[in-house]
Length: 110
Length: 119
Image 1 (cartoon, each protein chain N blue to C red):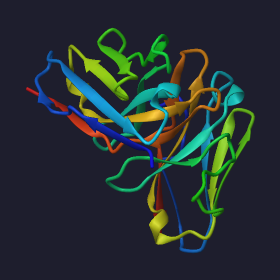
Image 2: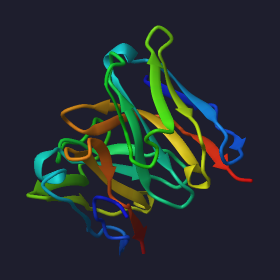
Image 3: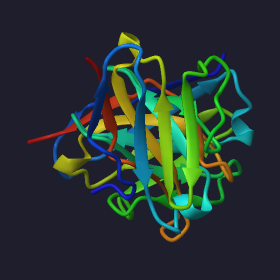
Image 4: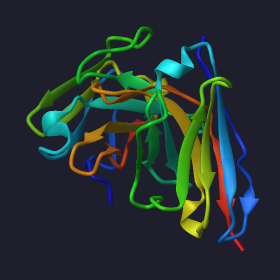
């Protein structure tokens, strides 16, 4: 059981948009920055979004992040076959003093 | 280019021990908070442990507290994870990474090393 809650899967056709939610509490998302990671099959996770809505260099602007209260959202527009991956949200939990992740969301391009 | 290279993963029996290493290059290792994250087969990411840049503050996930010890050698730019009293559910790929405290994100990830615990 993950501390942060994500939907197990989302899907859409190429060129469409998907959003992935990440729900937490006041001890984590409500008081901390949220980050998002992309894990392509068989590879290590890669930082996609940090500080709720910032993209590292090299990440296309098709990927966006937002946060409101104790929830965060990752958006992917112009969906491509290469976006098929697992996506994780993460942050720090101030009550247990550890990093926490969502259970991951598998994105499928139909 | 930042590189993190984990090693030490192996097949080990329950109750056994193992030490993982993570060799860093291309970054100011001694200035970075370092972490270990693991991923059981077919499962999600799990935070394992973190250590401050000066080696004086450590945190552990509940599932490994009292069994695992994180440490670092800044002179060798290497991070370690001593794993004792291993259990079946410790089977996972173990990743090391750099953590941005206050911003709460893992900027750099290694490729991971596989630990398999079975009898």
